[in-house]
Each structure stands twice: as C-alpha cells, then as structure tokens.
Length: 300
Image (cartoon, rainbow, N blue to C red):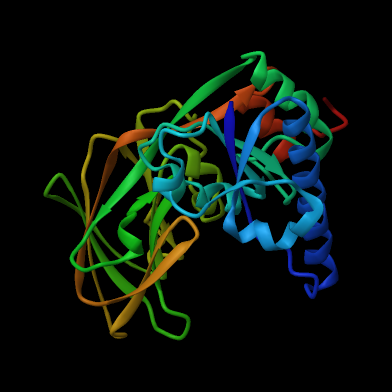
C-alpha cells in the first residue's frame, strides 16, 4: 500500500502559541511515518515537509500536485487543523482519494484523529475498519484565470469587501430567478460541511452533512430583515457584485483572490464528491456535542 502525507512546514521562529502547534504537527508527522514504515506502508511526502524533516525520516518519494498522486495512493493524510485539511481539496480534486485528518490544530471538525490515536487509526485503516463520508463540493465559474484552475471548495465560497472599503452590493439569483440584493460586508454560500464553519459564525444554521442543500448566509447585512436561506444543492447561484471600491475578495475555503468589480459569479454543485475517512465511533452528532460543548450543563 502507498499513501501520501500533506502538511505545512514548521517554522521555528513562530510565536509561542503557534510554535506549540508546529511542534505538535512535527511530532505527529514523525509518529505517523514511524507507524507506516513499521506496517510496511510506503509514504509519499509533500515537498513542503521534506526539508523540514531532513534525515529524521526515510522518505523516497515526494509529491507537490494533484497529478503526482492521482491513481497512485490509497489515502492522503492531512496533518494540521481544519484549514490544512481544506487545502487537500486542491490535491485530490476528482481522484476519489480518501483524506484522513490528523488534528494538531484547535477545533477539528474535519481533522478528528489526535496524536495519541495515530497508531490505532493506521491499524484500523489497514484492517478496513473505516467508512467513507462523501461530502458535496462547490464549483465556481467566472471569467478570468483564478485559483490556479482549481475552483472548488469543500466548506464555502465567500464574497467579501476588501479591508478598507465600504459595503458591497450583491445581487443574488437562483436558477436565473432573482432572490435578493444584499447590502453587506459579504455573502457566504456554504455546503453542509461548511455550515459549521464561517457560515455558523455569521448566524447560519447547522446542516447535517448528508443533506442535499446549500446555505446562503450574509455577512453583517445592513438590513434587519435579512436571514440565511437554505436552498437545494441542485440550484445554481448567480452573484452579481458591485460597490464603491473597484475590488473585492472571493474566497474558496482558505484561498482568496482579489477580483475587480463589477463581475458575475456562478456557483453550483461540483460534479464529484470529496471522500472523508471516518473511523469507528466517529459520527457527526458526537462531533457537535464535543466541539461545541453541547450538554455541558449541570442540569444534564
């Protein structure tokens, strides 16, 4: 078996809080490499990690892009937080390679395996004791060459004003039918996976991962009557953005590009699914209770 490992290089000059997370990621990576080698599993390491490890790990193969791993690996391990996990979308795309999230960050909705669970997690994968959680992705269509040709998002696609600009106006249509004009700091179109991320912090609802829906959530709207809207994942969302500033931001998860207004964006369900590995005793309701501290009341 062959697997790939993705993560960020660990900068030793980081502030104390960030350095602790970097040290945790480095420790998790070494533990994973040791366990894989012991189990007879060959590992491909992302190029960002190779110089960091030096002689600490015996890694023969290195990868840097989607084409390097498509059809060549059984799993892709992500070491870091949910932000690192989201970046794997650009690496797996439509390859159907399942992604395993090892959490060395903070909340960890997507990366759920702790450092202490790495060894038993690898054993479970080798024994086939896991399931694949299929997640919907968003696809962005617009004029121009942006996002390196990979216009997909697992959590959300967001349109936002630039740092110093005034509000922007976003005219939204569903399947060519006008929905509303939003005067706001921005607008989020989120998947069920992304409903517990940026959309949630802006007042959006939590949507079960297997729901066939998307969520449209405004960011600081200048209208008290505006509320998030749940739509079908089969709808095509069209955004026409304008404002006093000539520029605004478009974000696909953690990747952002500065775009000139006015412009029209088209957002729809991608033609393929993202495969997230879930081990035994991992389920969404348990994550909600543990990550959001639900039920932590003495009356319960």
